[in-house]
Length: 202
Image (tube, rainbow, N blue to C red; front, side, top):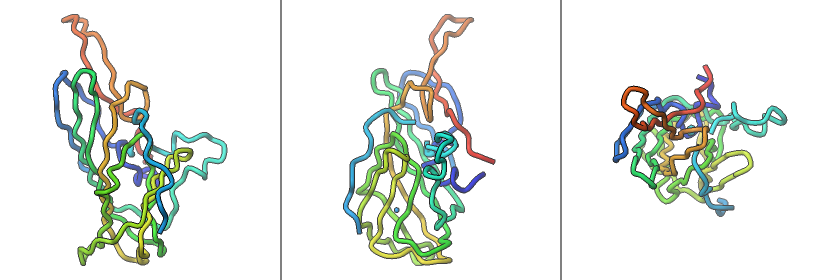
């Protein structure tokens, strides 16, 4: 898996499956500035998910790539999907353990269409368990970046756990994490599925 696509909000790893029209959980195992804008309210599309630089325009593709000061090592993704008529949505959290290649006061992730619960975002030093103080959040809607600004540097050669809760509507657009439907030929019933449009690089 490529590092830049892996450090998305990881909706890319959600498997396709079928649902009924009721609430059902789904889970998968896997940066001092003021906020410049709030998170987008439009339909969601992961991480990763998610949400991936692979969907960026071919021109000036480097503008969509994540900075290289952090290297992801391990990911845990939790998703709970609500399959209620007129209220299709999902929520969850992603935890990414990162290794610091160069000192930096920020964590940058890919995010598109996700409403990040910024008050609950945590960056914790692995080993000591010390939680770093967040100084602000920034959303770059043009390049699909979400940045956590910290009041201190992440130190080179150290490891940190980045914990980001989020929620979003489950879009009917054929992009990212989305819902669709088909007619069962045997029963004539309309069945719903939820899917992921993109896959991580290998």
